[in-house]
Amino acid sequence: VAIVMPVPDAAAAAGDPRDAVRAYYAAVNARDFGAAQALWDGTRTAAQLAADYADAASVELTVGAPRPPEGAAGSVYVEVPVTVTTRRRDGSVQRQAGRYTLRRAQVDGASAAQRAWHITAVDLRDAAG
Image 1: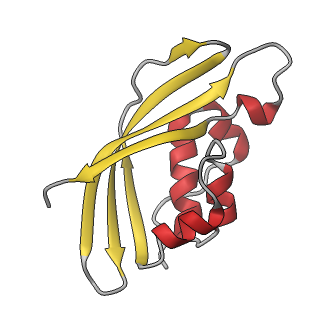
Image 2 (image 1 turned 30 degrees about the vertical axis):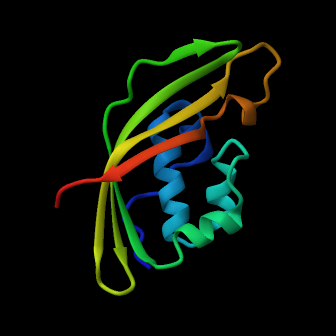
């Protein structure tokens, strides 16, 4: 399995939401679904992610500029546009485009883990070649 992007460190992922998405796909490519699951807000299990990517040989990610963040009840949300190209074990290729929505806490007393970006939602759709 090829890793196609560098793995950002935890401090970088806490600052730039794009780094959290990059770290997610680096973990997927490394087949480290526990690390990938840790970047979600608790709505996905490592077993679900392993099943989602069971036939993936590699996944390539291109990230765009995040939309301006929005605040809500002690949290900040941001959308990150992405293009994802999955090369399957059978040789087929799937290209998808869409966005990831990420959240982090911004309240006094929040821990470093709570202030880190976590994936809350994903909207990917098949894209042309």
